[in-house]
Length: 360
Ligand SMILES: C[S@@+](CC[C@H](N)C(=O)[O-])C[C@H]1O[C@@H](n2cnc3c(N)ncnc32)[C@H](O)[C@@H]1O
Image 1 (spheres, rainbow, N blue to C red):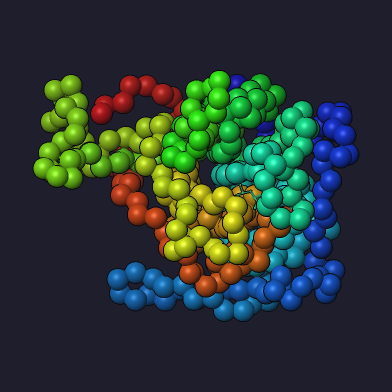
Image 2 (image 1 turned 45 degrees about the vertical axis):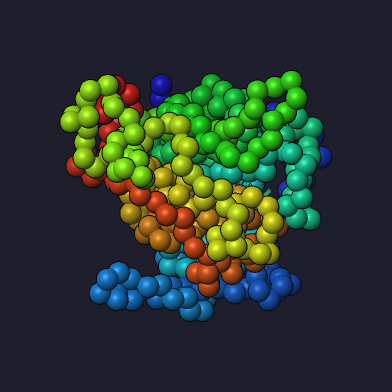
């Protein structure tokens, strides 16, 4: 299948205006009426401590160096609410950001939209659309995400299985994206529903725009019993053949912790946030240091914090709580979840699209 280098926004997909009340962002020339905290801009000073680096924010007047290269043209420039040398956050509707970006400029997109469950995110988010309007809205921003993705780039969509089954079909059939995985992310805190199986996973869809440019193998440690230190599984008699670095990451993730404790979650935002562990996997699997990651639905800023940590450039938007992200990124206050994953750099960086048997 030939990857598309550009996908024009299909305006013939008639979506009622009520389905998509886009909230325009201020452009560079009109930021004077913004609240003062949204005019804050920072750079990060990286200091070598001998055992690693520390990053300290300082005020700056320009966005990251790459920012001039991502706009479609001079007229589409936006003023970030926050900028570091690695990334820029825009306070407003993701469609306003996405439609201003040029084709093929992003290496990975990670999107964790509202799930249309009627949750209260903030004043501007509509999380109670009609089912068909919700799907049409998702197809709108997904079309733009595919357009801005470089050939070989990766697109991850985190959502309920009931929505992702439709969005995955849209991406494969109408956007001609290459399906890679349906990753099941186990959720621990969901109540049983009468007349249904007990829902216990979220879906993380993983597609690429043609053959993946980057796929880096992640390994997870061989599970051992915490009482006796012995192996928990017998690996069908092939234990000795296992790679000592661990098992190739599976497409069922049962080890991603929920974000509940105050150490990991801003007190100013009650809505769901994802674990840094999930984003570390996405970023490490699909990008190399220096690549550009886009997250249209910033939330508490997990994707951006992980990109800062892992040396990736980033871009993002958030409609309701950009100030929470600014605080997280400028204070470095929230802790990361433990992550024992190992990146297997011996295997080469681009494994290509082929599936094939895996040796462990
Ligand atoms: C499920 S949360 C994302 C959580 C995020 N992944 C994290 O780890 O914190 C979805 C976020 O999208 C934001 N949002 C909703 N509609 C939006 C839009 N049109 N453009 C940008 N952000 C939007 C909401 O305010 C909410 O914070």
